[in-house]
Length: 122
Image: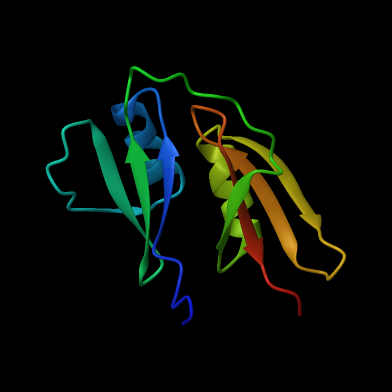
C-alpha cells in the first residue's frame, strides 16, 4: 500500500472569474475541462500531471492564511518570473534564497492564498 502521487490542490475562492484571471494571466496556468459539479469552479494544469481546482462555494467564508500554508511550483527562471510579476502588479515578495540555496518568491492570489515559485539549488 503506497501513495502514488499528488493529484491536485484545491483552493476555496470568493470570485471564480477573478481567480481564473489571476491563475491564467499572472501564473500563466493552462485551464482544463472541469466536470459539471453543482457549484462554481475551475481547473488548471500544474505541470504535466497535477491540477489546481478552484472551488467557488459562496456560502462558506474564505479564511485568510499565512504564507506558511502554501503550495510550491518549480519554475524555470526566477528572475524572469520576478520581472513578470512586477509587470502585472502582482502581490509578491522579492526573491530570497532558502538555506539550501534554492531561490523562492511568494505570491498571493486575490483571496490571499500563498503560492511559492522556486528554482532548485545549484
